[in-house]
Image (tube, rainbow, N blue to C red; front, side):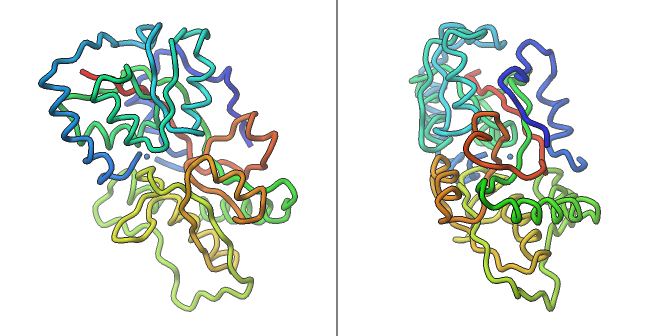
Length: 292
């Protein structure tokens, strides 16, 4: 399992977001929900009329600026390290939802937002005249499933299922549906006759991170929801998804309220002190959103 430490941040690496996005998930070939992103449209128009005072075109321009993040995310961890760090930002503003951070940016309350690249693209789609993503990515990170340290048997079982679902093309099919937008891609569908002799596994998530997990027609869907279902089907468990705030996921898993956490969660050395992780199933990119 690859661990992403703070030192792996790609400041001044010169890698473009577009190039990194081509390998957004490690198998083959991510956001607040579209509805949440669309909710920023009014702020976008207001900010456009007021005129942007931003002059951020590169990572080094973040010096002395205030960056918004979603509370408890990797962006939160990374940006908190950047106060007085190599980017020398002035402050970090934490928000419960990614959409709230973007709304603050559109209202000129903060200078930038650090967020997963696939998530960032959803906000750009909703506000194409006002928002943009810096060409240089901030960091590359592994996404994995978090499991309590006292459940090594479950971690091993999940790793076996992940490996099999990668090998048989199931993960590719899900990524084709949500990331590559391949025409006709069906993703994962539970095979007819699937049984659940082992009971139920509870998956803790934060369903405000499209395309990984988001709510549509009252149901949590997305890459993690679908891949989690495929994993549980293979292991003979019914999947139960519990939606909660992102920073509540690890405590829920530690306390046994949830069996595992799956929410575009990055493997970090800090988190590994409190929780175990499975093998990685996707690779994400942290990007910076700014006003045009």
